[in-house]
Image (cartoon, rainbow, N blue to C red; front, side):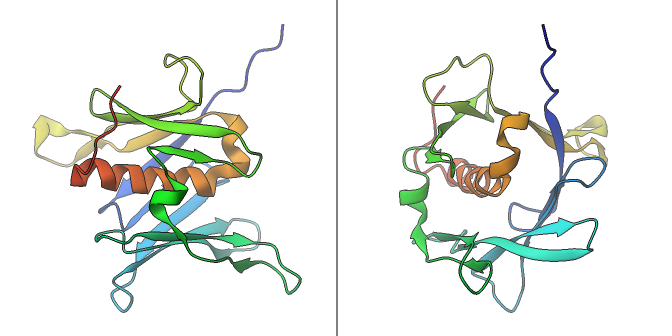
Length: 182
């Protein structure tokens, strides 16, 4: 019997939900989440390609801090990859659910105040993505361990959607609109 691939440990080095990096240790998957001061309502998710040393904007979230949130993703076109049309965030992440490009549906749930991504209809004990919180020395000093996401290898083709949905779910959890229950 073959042993399953271990989950990717994507470390979150956060200043806030709007300015952070999410990457694996060898930078094979490296995403920068940034809100520039000259575009304070638009949060961009950039993917860094280690081999070519290029940053590519793979998704944008507009209005992450306010109402009327919208998202759009990089899509292949005749002229090359371009950002697609804006979609309402509530349409993309409907009741904590979103679909990958392959059509598989996933659901964000909160478990002990930490988010988990579950494949729709599967067991809660085996999440596709598990968030692990940061730890601080004596609860107030520098971080002794950064937060991270354990991501199953089956989601590597949809990391952009996972990250955007995580940011929206985390913002929704912090705003306490309608918290996801476990």
